Length: 386
Ligand SMILES: Cc1cc2nc3c(=O)[nH]c(=O)nc-3n(C[C@H](O)[C@H](O)[C@H](O)COP(=O)(O)OP(=O)(O)OC[C@H]3O[C@@H](n4cnc5c(N)ncnc54)[C@H](O)[C@@H]3O)c2cc1C
Ligand code: HEM
Image (tube, rainbow, N blue to C red; front, side, top):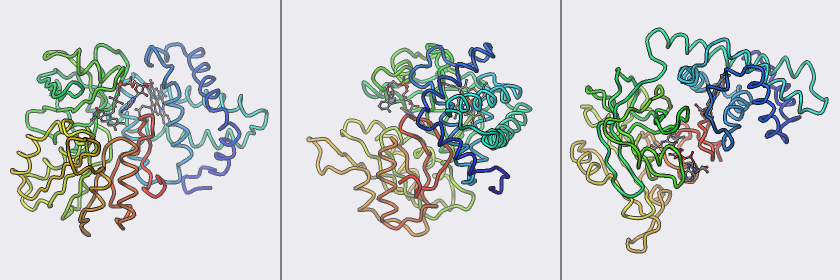
């Protein structure tokens, strides 16, 4: 038993029975959920083929990592608040739990026991309880999502747009967090984008969006969104924020649009009288992808204690070539510093490995835990990410 009172061994045994049939479990889970409770289907995107197992994968990851504790409660609280935007109500949680266990039992080849059911039900109730409580508390003061008017649309390259929006009500968040966005072109399809500025008195938010060829939301934001359009914003999420202690030095390592939340963090510190010194490394493949240089140079001037390195990895016209991880390796890592890394899952993994190899303590390295499909998972220690 863990100190959560959940029988972790029985949870793992149960999962081991169905792990090889995870796709089948997902299909049965949604089959049961939507046939028994057809109204729930309306909360999900019309097309669910590609990412049909998102919810189930996240759910099983959370259950299997219940022991990790650190950060899990905060992650689940954010997730519960975020689920209000789908129209999820407290009573829906029990339905989902029943279907989850039913789908696992159906795929365990007769080996599923009452002990497996009891362990999974206890874990699920614990998780659902945290989500529901956070959602109910949030509902007293906060809307489930925000309408936000597009007030700026700056196509900086063929495949890169910077969008400025003004939410219709105050949008409380911390520098470094992200929001999910929905465009009118793709109802019920939400994607996370980092907020590229710290909170501002005028409530404006900026996003840096790189177009993924064929991607639904990024394409709509870049090519089919105009000033005056209305987007929907989910509540702020993410754990990549400055801690209360205040570091003396920040090393910020960005790949591509991973720059957005790190820029927000630099800007947040720019006005602090005892601000930390900052090293910001921005990695791009081609020199022309350095889409935010003028702004960064202005920020460096205003900050006064910021160093900026552009690492270009693959541009024959630009030498010397170096990846962000290379730039990290030849960089001074300050003993009193905190490190933030943001970019594609591969870039985050490579940079984190370099940092650990350079002796940076894992608790000093801050990232979002994102799996290769883009699903944000509960925070894990950089060691278990290796
Ligand atoms: C925490 C977080 C913060 C993020 N912040 C930003 C941000 O600030 N700016 C930004 O531009 N994006 C950001 N993303 C990525 C963003 O959420 C979307 O995944 C991305 O814009 C693609 O969405 P789409 O709807 O256009 O593509 P989809 O319709 O989801 O994808 C279309 C196809 O492209 C594949 N695909 C999806 N993403 C990629 C990718 N990155 N590279 C290659 N293939 C891909 C999919 O597997 C699918 O086959 C963030 C993601 C996370 C998890
Ligand atoms: C313990 C309970 C639950 C957990 C851990 C959970 C977790 C998740 C996660 C991680 C996602 C992926 C998107 C994201 O990161 O925001 C997701 C999506 C979603 N969840 Fe949940 N969820 C739970 C319960 C529910 C319930 C009860 C419902 C409604 C009946 C629900 C409806 C949805 C919907 C509609 C989506 C969007 C799916 C998509 O875009 O493809 N979830 N959930």
